[in-house]
Length: 202
Image (cartoon, rainbow, N blue to C red):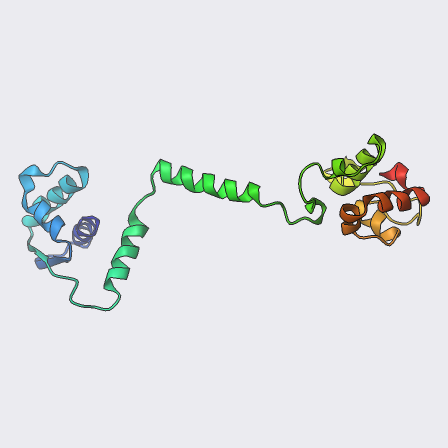
C-alpha cells in the first residue's frame, strides 16, 4: 500500500497525463482498495484522495500481477523487505536491550586488572587485614597514591627507580613480577613489595 501511495504521489508531482498503469504484486492491497467503501485507515484515504484528483486528468489502471513466478531468491527478498519495513515494538526494543545488557555484565571486562577468578579474591588469601587490603588495591589498580588531575590518573613517583609513576603495572615490572603472580602467589608478591619498601605506594 505504501508503494501505491508513493506511485500516486509521483504521478501528481510530475503531472503525468494519459494512460497510467500501476502494477502491484500485493493482491490483498488491490482487493482492499477495490472495497473502497470499507476503507477507513489514513493511508487508504490518502490513496483515494489522490485517485479523485488524478481521475480528472488521466486514465488510471491499478493492476495486480503475480510476482512469485518461480524466480530464484524471491521469497528471501520478500522476507527481507518485510523485516526492513516493520518497526519494532516497544517490547521488542526493550527485550533486545535487556539481552544486550545481560550479556555485557555477565562477561568480565577485558582489562588485565579484572582477571580475578571471582569476587572476593583477596579473601582467599590468608593474610592479615592490612595485607588483604593492599593486595586488593594492587589487584584493582586503586592504589593509595592514586589521584585524579583534570580527569587523568596520577600516581606518586616509584621510590625504587625514582623515574616513573608508580602505577600498578610499573610496580610489578619494577620487581620483575607479572599480574598472574598476584592471583597464584599473593603472599610472594607482598613479600617482594615489602622487601623493596614499596608498600607505602600500594
